[in-house]
Amino acid sequence: MLVLSCATPGYTMHSLKSSMPRSTAIRSSFNCDHPFVPEVAKAVDSLYSEFRAVDNLVACNSSRVLKAFQNARVGSHHFAGCTGYGHDEAGGREALDQAFAEIVGAESAIVRSQFFSGTHAITCALFAFLRPGDELLAVAGAPYDTLEEVIGKRDSHELGSLKDFGVMYRELPLAEDGGLDWDTLAGALRPHTKCALIQRSCGYSWRRSLSVNEIGRAIKIIKMQNPDCLVMVDNCYGEFVEGIEPPMVGADLIAGSLIKNPGGTIAPCGGYVAGRKQWVDAAAARLSAPGLGVDCGSTPGDIMRALFQGLFLAPQMVGEAIKGTFLVSEVMASEGYKVQPLPRVPRHDTVQVYYLSVPCLANYSKK
Ligand SMILES: Cc1ncc(COP(=O)(O)O)c(C=O)c1O
Image (cartoon, rainbow, N blue to C red):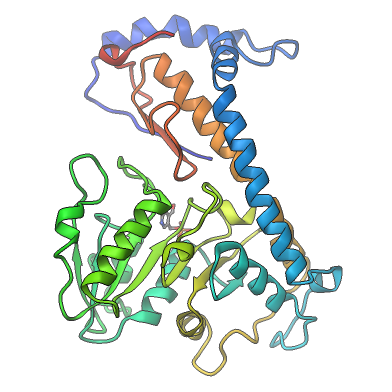
């Protein structure tokens, strides 16, 4: 779970004083017989049905992962490392790609330790789609910060941003409720809009995260205007939070990081791109080089084993993270802090934000 705490100068200091005895009590009452302080114990008891629903989600996602591992005939021979060009490996890359593609409902996938991060994987996907004269349209407000230099929104000092290559960029602000602006989206595409970018998770901003069904609705609206417009979903922090993934509702490509949800806390590095085969191949050519594609790249040591193991554990780890978000949100809101998402609201990513400032007494509701 990613917990973001933000200090807001908007709350007055005297209220902070009034919250001190309670926080001190939280710290000092910890012991092994009663591992949870009373506020947390009470929240845990009250969250039984949310936790139960998460257990069902974990069971459902784990069985999808297991089935995909069986279909890819994953075995211990796939865990071996390789060096040099990486040609001489025992099918581990192919099995991992095949399993991952099935798990997310995609035609194809490339899961590699050589992706440095989510930003790198997303960049490969965007460069797969876009050519000079095309337009990239971000439909869910400003994309994650690190993409600003990739797009050329922020000066990339001629290092080769999309803008440097003649790709135009536009973004649709979010609606007042923090969700997609459906009315504007319905007429947003222009003839040269080649790719629509949808960010599933709120990332580090104070906005709603999108459900996969909302993403599916957006894709329908985009494709209705131009069936050739390709849709790329930044899937960071969203994997396994629901029982379906964006390729199942029509996303052409998704990309994300193994250092987050799908690495299951085990993967030491890496990322992925998944979706339609033609575009996964093009993203692979950005990661490596045109002509090299997906069939090379060494993975020394234990890394392949860790990637398989992490992916296998990911639904369970994500489930624990989601329970964490419910718990943090419940406790912090009951202590009067501003939280997002709100307590007991269905989760669409593993991010929980609370303002670690003084309690917002207006919202204070002791249960
Ligand atoms: C929604 C979202 N997209 C993209 C990224 C970028 O991922 P990375 O930090 O792995 O480059 C992040 C990082 O937190 C994120 O939250």
